[in-house]
Image (cartoon, rainbow, N blue to C red):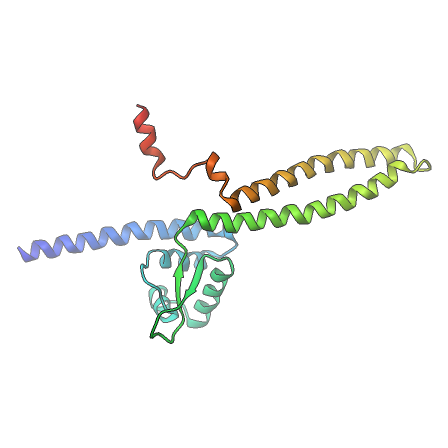
Length: 196
């Protein structure tokens, strides 16, 4: 009887490890989107499945990375706010925990970057528009130059619209307003079955 129980426990452990491994592999593969290498992505994904804070030594043992490269990887994950340092009473060692709320992470990560992209480009666009208008308003400039300035101006107006839209998108993500239009659902597949 105990032997049967042991086999069931062993099978359950294998299934758990396989389930975690398949997600760890896909997270590691797609973390380049956030500007990190697959090995750093693997560290985050491994931490994601840990339910208690970890020390660098804990992580080193799990991933077989050297302590200096582990420290660099954790710092990179902290820089993009997907890993946080936490404090635990009685512990002198640094402890780290993975961000598990992907909606919150997505909001901060992309919201900040899109807002930055819009601001930097709008400054340049406005500067460029002023220069192009000088060309267009100067009567001594030939028609070919003016035509080129006019074409540039039209393109930049479209680019400006995109940057303003991107700003609004970033703000709607930061404020959470976007979730009114794209609600967070527990499992959209359940809703699809309800309609059948």
